[in-house]
Length: 139
Image (cartoon, rainbow, N blue to C red; front, side, top):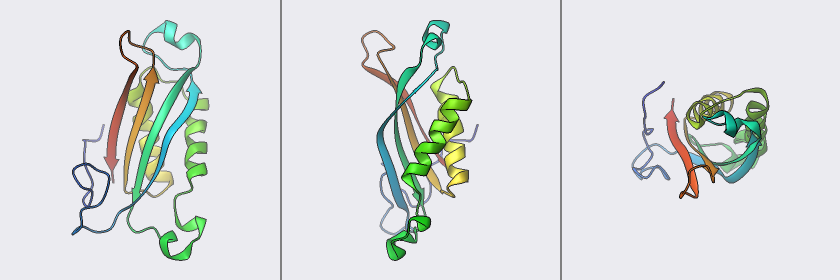
């Protein structure tokens, strides 16, 4: 597993590049809800569960800011399709390896420099509305 790292140019909150740092453009997908079979316990894996994904993907200076062309940015729909493919073809027990696999895929496939990915499950732990994992990776 790669160590936790905030990329150069991303402020402590991770949301925006620091003013004096190289530029980082961030696209995001929030509240993406997809069903998959996942769970640490067998009873959780009997039926598909809804997961919520919140994703931020950073790349140094996307050309689309100047060209207005889809091929010069990260295509949101292509990111969602890639996540759907992973959920349809792989089985995970825990959210952590799912998040790691998705982060690796997105960094590589979409030539991203940084990703923050949050995966949330609802109604799993008594007394908690949501549980989940948030990871940040860079290359």
